[in-house]
Length: 382
Image 1 (cartoon, rainbow, N blue to C red):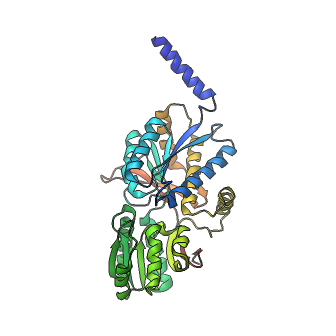
Image 2: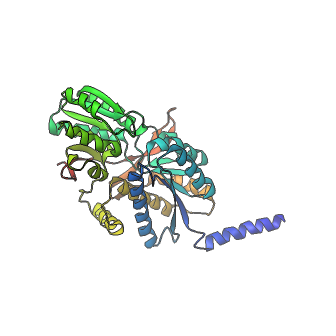
Image 3: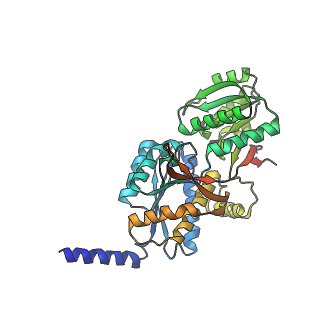
């Protein structure tokens, strides 16, 4: 019986290597495909699928095809945890992309780290996520890197001296954005006239905006996701508040123009990606995305698209053995050295440290493009 089991295991391994269907590289996708966060999660899925189609069409990874195993985590912590466990332990994926929101990542990425599975965030920008451990990666540039650059450009271009601050106080992403805006404002010696807060799901912001209007600020620093940020801009303009808004990457979405419509002008944001960036890699991505999906891409689709290509470069350099544990480790070891120039521009990783000062996960190193909304477009500032 023991001999049969050994032979069976050996034959199973041979079948795995010989059968193209079994030799597919399974990659997990845990994204918010329903709920409010789907405005980010759906473009991420489309960006990943576009890249996989191109990679597989060009021969795959050393003859093996990539297979995406997609699950809807709904933008909720509990669902993200459940989906991560399924993809890791039941589907036995080589790597995970996701989750969509930083709130969920702070919980679910611990599962991937404990199981020694690479988790790759394409939209998580809050503090502390990659500090979870050395299996945690992201190519979404942190708010700590982007917001000070955005604010500095806005100050230089407008000459503003004082701002009102408005942020969501019940979400790790918007709270992290507030913290970094506060540090940048202090460094630039910009006075804060008032600080107001809101919660996820709020729909009436008039009381806070009335206080902001009375504070005589020169601009409004806004740390929000677009679901609240769009209505905030509408209500501000309706109250006669014509001040510029300075926001984070949660506001970098075409969804803004649906929610705010004629009230969406004069928002300043920074991002490694812009639809207006004329680089050849970006133009090819935009054209391919529009052909595949009949719509324009956004920052989150672009970051996901590049993330898949970054992973593909690492996979091409390692030897996949068919052992899930060994292959997961090999990918983790090979990924940090990858450099790539894609839709979001030149990219490389930098390792961060955990709370004890020990080496942990990997953040993105990329430059920010600062933009201002005008006429339902994100215009690059010259």
